[in-house]
Length: 366
Image (cartoon, rainbow, N blue to C red; front, side, top):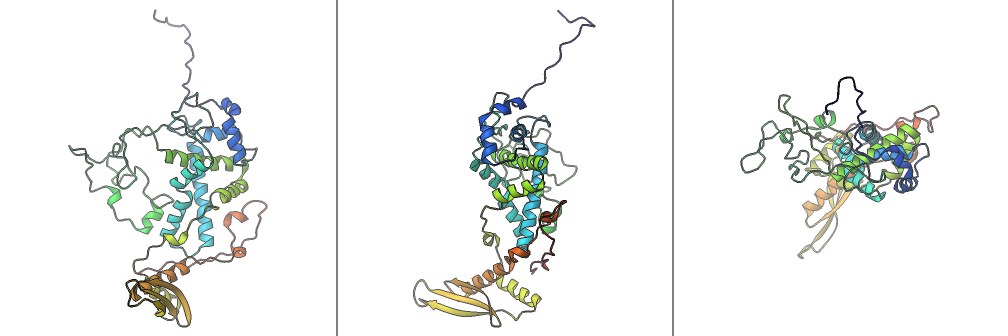
């Protein structure tokens, strides 16, 4: 029977996408994770449970971790960048962006989530244990494009009759981007933001993807945890947590360099710094007439040896020696007692006294 006018209506019940905050107090997984990470008591388990709820699992902004992840992403980028720039002031910009991706990139944060013992839920819902990472998984068929930044199903590019994605002339991924564009227009890793449109009049995707990958959900969880730790405990515990879990990871910075013309770059460097022109000299050799000779070549500026390399020929050893000399120059690090990070002198009671840090003229441009 139809409801008559004037009759009071029953209150609508809000749909529950994730476990209620009260369930976090009864979760053994959350309590174990809180103790395993040595989180301060000022960070409640309810907030830790919210960090585990991705926006794809619960669209309500007051229950998911999207806002905390935005703050945590800025904190991760800031603390990582200041440590890299102050400890390695001569690093080129592309090496800094690659190092940031190595320290706080999605792949690294996903590995960190696994190391912490955080498991993922098969599907989000109110009955899931709050100690599990909850997110809606990507539907089958949402394969990634070759650039790794767009999904074929949701991109605005045309698809021909055979199901092959046709390349558009206005596709931003095909543009030649310089370092200035990577610094100004892109994210903290120097990459194009996902879903960025090259043309302002190009049609945007009306239906965003309903799910995310496990890697993206794990990265959002780690970023949200850093944001929650900053809000509840302050800057000092957040910086200590960053040093213990991010900067403690070993990243071989010397593998981030790929010189195209190392001998020419080294000559430009010596000319800029006022050094004598570099000269390659043979240090030792073995098996010159055999099938596997080895030549050890050194690059000298006057009486100072800048670098040393080995190769199967004299030219190969000279090129490797020049590349090692450039790596030694770019990977220069001041003494530990002379390095003072800007975040270490902020606040009412700074732990250190500020010292002027080294500012390098910049990388070699050829």
